[in-house]
Length: 357
Image 1 (cartoon, rainbow, N blue to C red):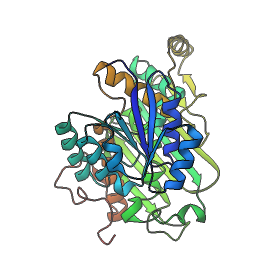
Image 2: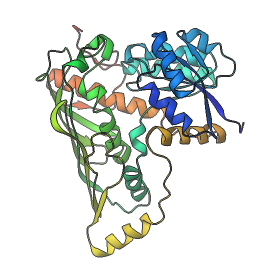
Image 3: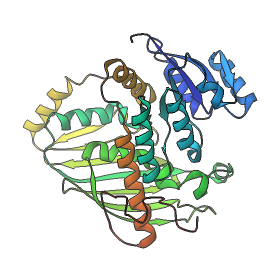
Image 4: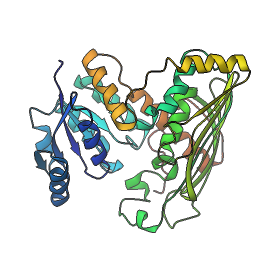
């Protein structure tokens, strides 16, 4: 199959970014339909973005024979059922974060995916900024040496109108707070570079808003490679920043602080010696930039489907992310360190939410 994939998008909030990203790759994708429970909003977006078909029914979308892939950009609590429906209809599914509300649900989606013959791609678009991709390139080239210590910071601002949306700020519908719905990308960027987490100790607090879930967090990590890392997250900061810093044996890498584009250039790579700096600079002349963010992930998705290779983000990646989420919430609630990996016998396997939620 070398033709364009025909795409549809469910949810026209963040889904607008999916539409525009597909449309930025016209040789690979054609957006043929949008779906949203709000018919007026769906029609408005379809008209603005020149999408020919509109529906309020995922059932109807799944019956469209010419649709190859469906993007799910709806509230988190409905992701599981919608992914299942899309896969069982014989379509590829691309799904926003957080993918599902528990490791148990994630493992079930893996079983459904395997039975369907199709694939699910979780969204982790921040991986594909050129700055982070340069760091990944240097690590893969063997130039970093062993990792020492790393930090990831997410300090954003969310005010009362943000939480006035009925499904936000509640365990049952948003599934978590700032660790899950805001810091999930900086966490993924951290593990994308460093690999698996071995041990987690987290402190969480609700200090800014009158909501059920946390809006502040501080987390200490021991990575499987023996290095140490920390995560801080809040929605009570002005100015807003996101920042990563990785200290390796041979160089230190530091991101820019643009809150929503810190995986983009510029990043700085400071070699431990002039000779190492020369090696880094030479290696980066061989870095090949591809599209970034959503277009970058969709570009790689298309190539994987055409070539039958591994997706740029897999359900295994999503499991690692949600395993860290589970560990952080359980640690913050129980005031205990948590060892990873987390198996089916863990008290939080079926849900990271508190028992009373």
